[in-house]
Length: 292
Ligand SMILES: O=C(O)CNC(=O)[C@H](CS)NC(=O)CCC(=O)C(=O)O
Image (cartoon, rainbow, N blue to C red; front, side, top):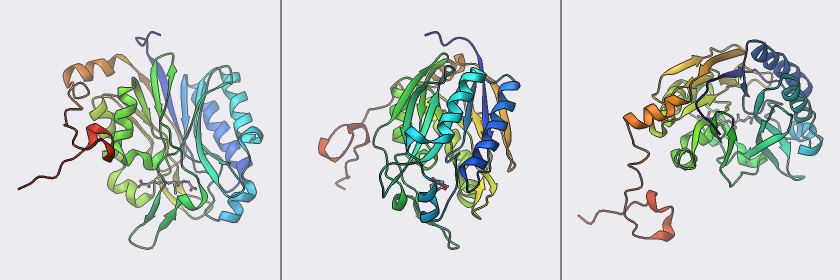
């Protein structure tokens, strides 16, 4: 695998609605636009198929992975356009009681290269009354996922995962050059944290970060932050969306990963903590209480 040639990455920013059929139409239109402008890798946001706050309505529209119309259509589209298509996530049925928030990396032959189930559940009460209990409807994943693209290795994560830096360090240490964070950030937390978190994950790991976002006021009355981002390994923002749906793209030079890591070799300088009690977690995260 040679990682020395450049490619074009495109973030598709969406304003997903209540119904999978409508959302699919919006997704297909924007993905076609990205491919027509020369994109090789296209990413869509978290829950590209539907945004439902109501559990009953959500479960009425959930399909199993094997029957999901969005996944079928996106696989056919990737094959037609001959692109790598990363569907940031689809809400799918896992059991009769539980959904799963699962992303898919689809290859230019329409095959699924990898899928990832969101690990960290957004169970949060924000000041002002906005409240989320993702774990009430979704079962979390337990496995970090990497896959190989023609241009280097990619790590898959989703949205709230971005607040857990150990996940990204593990992906980088497993050889990832590209970290991906398709999202549906709230407007409030996005304004405060979105750029900082994504740029930090890029800088501390010497990786590109690709984050396609949900944007604006949705049919279910939720407001998401938008600002899809492509961040370089040195931390520069290479492409950024606003709050309207659209396509945001740029050329990617994978050699910049090595350049950044040569300049600041923090990946090599990591894992220097001693281990006092291996039962209490990963050794490089262990913190010993001072005895002063
Ligand atoms: O449920 C849906 O319809 C789509 N899923 C989401 O919107 C998810 C779970 S509620 N949102 C986040 O993870 C936001 C994280 C965030 O905003 C932060 O970390 O600050």
